[in-house]
Length: 129
Ligand code: 5GP
Image (cartoon, rainbow, N blue to C red):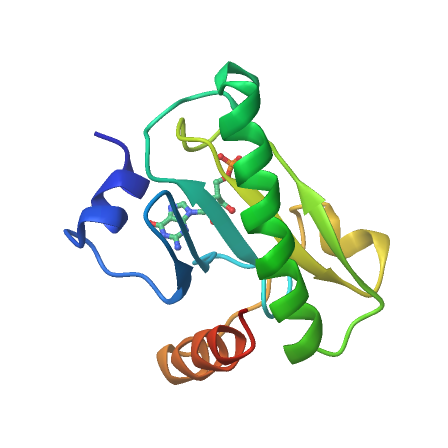
């Protein structure tokens, strides 16, 4: 069982931003930038291109809605999207508020307190439509 499945089942906590029957979005615990969010299909699949075309399209639709909510919440030049998966073998889309190239490079990290994570997740979730 992946760490993200444990988040989906509630076995381990997360700062949840959005959820429906098939997807969940929560804040990345080690963010590149404030508002860095992961969008995850509840079905545990390792690689994104092993999803069916329908599952892939639904994941992109859900990610679009989450990205819109991030844009409304966080002041940034744009929201970037990245799919890697080398650390956690459960499909996830990184949505990252960008102000510079460094924000998408996974080398520079920001530290947030528990209270900051809670407030941020709440603000983004309020803007999720
Ligand atoms: P990737 O698999 O795309 O290379 O990276 C996995 C991402 O998941 C990383 O950005 C890492 O910070 C994040 N991550 C790993 N474990 C957890 C966790 O338990 N909770 C949350 N919210 N994020 C995690």
